[in-house]
Length: 83
Image (cartoon, rainbow, N blue to C red; front, side):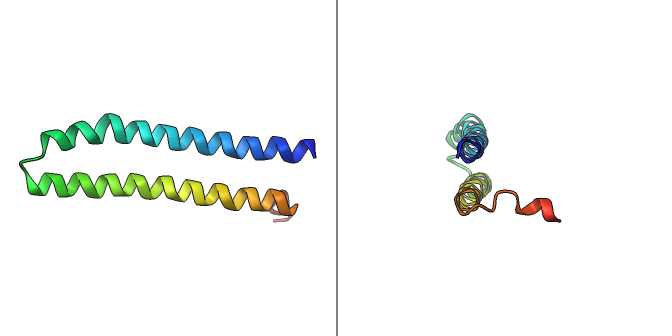
């Protein structure tokens, strides 16, 4: 039981770090640029696509976290060792 708890926390911490880094990147880089590009439709469109890509990566990390937690809960945490 102790081992599963450590694995769950490790997965949660790793996902939180990645989501935090991507969130900071989105806030620090993208949002100030959107303020500058309000007059330019092409630049605004490019930045919106760029922001959607970052959001898609964040969603992907959260989906992978959910799958990992299900694996740990189901006792399949070491299935990859067979291959």
